[in-house]
Image 1 (cartoon, rainbow, N blue to C red):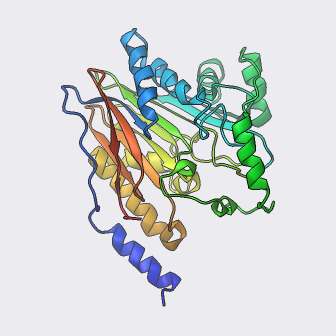
Image 2 (image 1 turned 45 degrees about the vertical axis):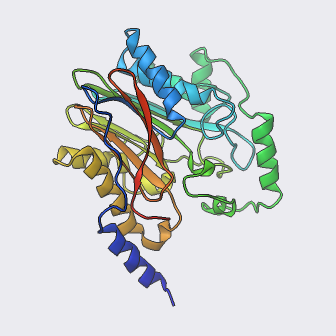
Image 3 (image 1 turned 135 degrees about the vertical axis):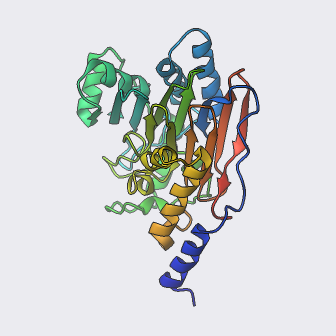
Length: 333
C-alpha cells in the first residue's frame, strides 16, 4: 500500500536523481539567445519583441511588445482578452515588467483592460509604487488613458457556464482540479513569461496572465510578484515561471533561480535546482502539478526545467531565428 510517507520518499528520491531528459541547448548562432519565452505561443511574442528591438526599441519596449501579442489573442484563454474568468465570471489580469536596474511595475486583479503589461509599465514609470491591485489598478488604467473593454468573450463565457454546472462554490484553493487537466495542457498554460537581453548583456523581462481558470475571486498567483513570476538581476541573469503559481510563490521561485546563478550555477542547473527543491519540499502535494522555469544569463545561455513533461519554450537568437523546444522534466508523468 502506498502511503503519503512512502510516496513522499519516492518523490524525494526522484528529486535527487538526474533529470530524465535534457533540454536542448540554446541556438548555436553567435551571441546566444536574445529572447526567451514560455510555451509554443511564445514564438509569436518573440517575433514581436525582436521586431521592436530591430527598430531601435529598448529591452523594456521589446518585452512589452512581445507580451501584448498573447494579451490580444482571442484564441488564447490564459492571457488577456478571452482569458477564462474567475468563478464569479470576471476576467482579471496580472502582469509585471522589470529590468536589471531594479525598475519594476506590476498590476494584479486588473479588469476591463486589454494590455495589463502596458499598465504595469505605467506603474513603473508614473508612480512611486511597484504593485497596484484590484479596483485601484483598474482606476489607474483609466486615468492613464487605457480604454475600458470587456475581456469576456462568448467562447470563454461558454466555458465558464459549463464549469458552473458541476462546480461547488466553496473556498477551496484546489477546486480547479475538478476540471479535467492534462499535464502541460491548456489549463497549465496560465502565463507567458518573456526574457530578453542585448549584445552588452543587459536584461529585462515581463510576465502576464489571466490566471488560473475559474479561480476564487481575488486570487493572485505568482505572475505579478517580483521574485516569483519574474526576477531580473544585472550581471547575473533573469528567470520567469509558469504552471501552478501557488507552488512558485511558496519558494520565491525565480528569485531562487537567479540566486543560484549568482552562486555560480549555470542557467540550466539553476532551473533544475529549484524544481527539485519544490519536489523535495512538497512531496505528494505536487503530484500531477506542473511548474516550470526559464532562465537567461547575460551571455545568452538558456535554462529550462519543469516538473512534468509538456512544457515548451521559444528561443530567438541574435539573428532573429526562433525555435520552439520541449522542456526537460523531473518526472515522466
